[in-house]
Image 1 (tube, rainbow, N blue to C red):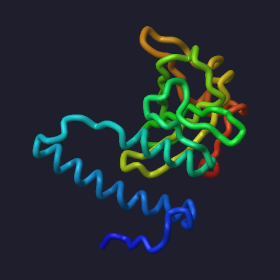
Image 2: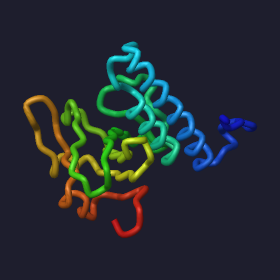
Image 3: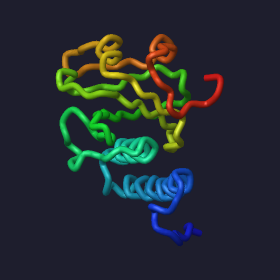
Image 4: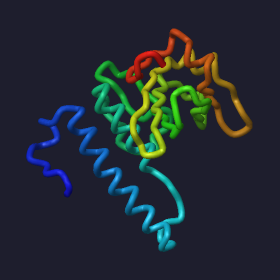
Length: 167
């Protein structure tokens, strides 16, 4: 049975919103799976990035960019600092992955790396200053790649905003 939304979302806590969002995401994933089997859906787009941006904006009290195709940044805080938000689905937080940016020349203040499980359970969120992204990342032929691996995960300049103990 679907949960009843008895209050405005502004009055809900972050955890209540996140729990409700997880319920609707599971429904959404089941619907997408059925539509894919019917041949109606042919790609997997938007849910992951939209959910990551929403989670980070809620957690850090950010204002999302008015356009989802905003160049260089996805959100701003009250002090005007800009955030580029990227997400990946991983099996665990020690799995190597990369966060790819189209252009590194258009600066932002922070890269926020969001780690989801394959069912969109939030595993972790890390905030990386722009200078650290530039230093530890590398340019490829088509994008700028910030690799998440053992070395970057242990860099003390990277702030782990949501992270399990001992990982």
